[in-house]
Image (spheres, rainbow, N blue to C red):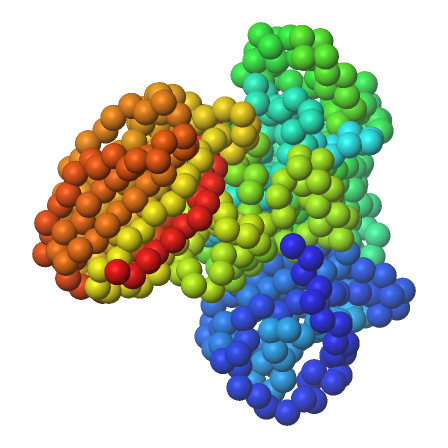
Length: 618
C-alpha cells in the first residue's frame, strides 16, 4: 500500500512552465503538499480536478501526501487550504505522468486590514450574517455524491482496527435525512484482541460523520438559536486568491451549563458563506458532558458497557459549486474511556473518523433501495480484511500515511497473514471489484468482498482463461471463514469452485461446480447449469469443505466430477450436452456470497484456497 514509488520533485514554477504534453497517459498523480514558509506537511488540503465543468478530487493526509485520479480529458488541478494561497496546474500545459511524485508548496495567506467603516461589524454580527447566508446557499433539491471514509480505533499502546470504505450518499434536505450505500470497503484488525465493537460501536461509524453536512444539522456554535451561549471574537481577515476571509474564534460562555465547543470559523467576507470550522470540546463544559443518549445509552446498559467521553475534536470544510454549499471534508476525533467487565475490557480509546467527498454532487435519480442501504448495525468492523495493492483502482481516496502503512503491515504480521501476490498474467479478472485474489506458488486464494451471486442472469467474480476446443479443468479447493481459518462459513450462500462460461452470448450461459454453504453451515457441493439466464442444478451434502473438482469438456459435452482428498477415484456427477460449448469459453475459478438479509452478519466471510489449478488441452 506504500504510495510513494518514485521521488521526482516538480515545483509549481517548473510545472507551470513545462511544455504541452499528451494527457492520455495520466491516471494517478501522487505527491505531497507542504508549507513553503515552514516546510511542514499540510494535512486536509483540498485537491480538486476540473474536467469540462465537473469537479472531483480528495484531500491530503496528515503527512501532506495525496493520491488523485486525473482523467485524460482533465483541464487543471487546484491545490488549496484555508489560510494559504491556492495553487493551480494547467494540465493542458503541464508535463505530468502517473509515476511522477510532485511536491506542492503553498504560501501563507496574507493578513489584511479591514476597510475603515463608521461602524464595523462585530464578530457576532458576522456569525449571524453567515448563518443566514449559509442557509440560503444550501441545496433544496435531493442530491447525491460519493465519499471516502476512514476510521481508526486505538488505545495508547495498540491499534485495534483500521477501516476504509467508499460510500454513495444521498441527501434529502426537505426531510433532513440521508441514505448511505457501501460501494467498496476493507478493514484490518488485530485478531489477537477481541472484536471490541461488534456489540456496540462508540463512534457511530460513517453515519455520524455525514451529519456534518449542514443539510442535516448545524453545529451549536452556528445555530441561530444558540449563539447566545457563545462568545465570538474577530481574529483576522486574510486574503486567498482574491478572496477575503474572516477568521472568528469562539468559546462557550462561562455560565452556560452545557458541554459545548470552542474553536475557529472561517467565513467569506463577500457573501458570508461558511468555508470551514475547527472545533474541540470547551474546557468550560467538561463537567456537563453527556456520554450517551437514546438508543446508545440503552444498548450500553444492556451490554454492561461503561462509556465516558473524555474529549473531542471536529473539523469540517465546505465547497460552493453552482452557488450551492455542500460538505467537502470532515474529521472527528473522540477520546473515550470504554470498559466492559464481561469481556475483560478496560481501555482509554482514541477513535478517529475522516471523510472526503470525491466527486461533484448530482441530483438523485434512483433512490438507494432499502435492502441496499447501509445500516448503523452494519458496523465498519464487518468489512473484509483482505485486499491487494490495486484494491481501490482509480478511485479517489485519502492516501494512507506512512504510519498507517506501517500499522497495517505490522497487524498483518501479527495475524500471520500471507503476503499477497498477484495472480500470474495467465489469469484475467471478471468483476474484479467483487473479490480479491492472491497467489502463492501453486495456490490461488479468492476472497469475496461484496455480495454477489452466480444465479440466473446475475454474475459474481472469477479468474479465467480464454480457451477453445477440448480441455480438462481441475483443482483442489479448501474453504474456510475469512475471519477464522479453523471454522467454515456459517451463514448465507457462500461458495467457490470451477466455472465454464460463454462470454459471447447475449444472455448468461455457464456451468459451475462449487463447494460452500447453502443457507446453513452444512458443507455441500453445488452443480449449477445456467442457460439463457435460467439456472438449474443439484445440491448434495459432503463431509468437509475441501476436496477436488473437475470438468472434462469434449465437443459439446461437459462432464462434472468430484473427489475427496483421501481417495484416488473421481466420482462423476453428470454430463451436459450444450450447444454454446462449441464457442471460445472462459474457464477458471469463481467465488460468490449471497445473503437473504442485510444485517451485520450478511457480509462475506469466506476464503477459498485453490491448489494446483490446471487447464489442460486435450
